[in-house]
Image (cartoon, rainbow, N blue to C red):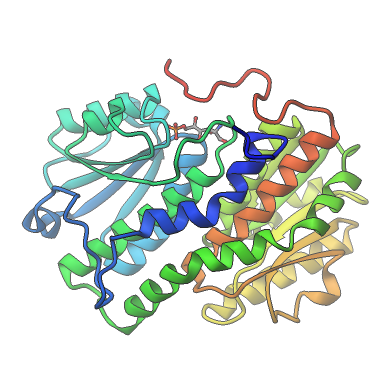
Length: 369
Ligand code: M6R
């Protein structure tokens, strides 16, 4: 049932190109427009939405953080992403014009369920993004957009995460389409690129041997830091979460701009720091800033593991290890940048003799608050 792989996690990492393609299947029509009739929220309701609130836990929360960038950029609707376990306790401001998006692989996470119940009590509309047909979260929501990752068995979420991202992009683009905001060339080219992205994920998977080797060489380390900016920041958080749950290592993700506000004090000789570099095309200002961050940490002794787009030469002099990913539009980069971090964590777990599919103290679905 593991399809020849040693662990479900490896199988599920390998299934990502298909999972991504399946989640897009039938949702983009020939003219390049989105067809999401299955989301039974009428267009007039979506046109009235004046705030989007995303609630989720763990890896799904990281997908939600990335969705915030996409939704605000493509639709200009204010969006906030909140940990489901915090949400209802702060008495959030919600009404009929709020669209709450609850993201959950299992559809059974109690924190997320309680958050959406609270949202519906306040009159908000709830859209679930879920991987499990007929589970509690979609049943209790007003609408659902299923991710088609197939069953995810390993406790550490991989393919579900990539499909959650795809679903979030679809929701963001669909809101843009329905409301006519920013619906122009940029959006059409993003949709085109999104429909190609499964091939790009495949390319990343084909080049992971050096990442595995690097992971094995770091098996004795105690700490790994992850840095990113913009959508690379949630990717950094996701890389750190994977490492914590699988390798039981101290791992932290930071927004690279925050370094100088404290975390840079952690940098010491030979400390591995993974840096997710935004594309030098597009918002190049972000790229230049992160290149300076890499220089700063390296000057203080960090061992830099740089994840950067093909053709980005500016990072080469400062990268102790360089992991190449295909060029994508900025907002889609997490779909390719996350993959090496999953492989890295899985290999480190194996090298440290940990149980990959069933990490200690964790369960696949967390049905208690
Ligand atoms: O089933 P859900 O997506 O609601 O689960 C949320 C988190 O518990 C889950 O993503 C968890 O963080 C994973 N173990 C991360 O790999």
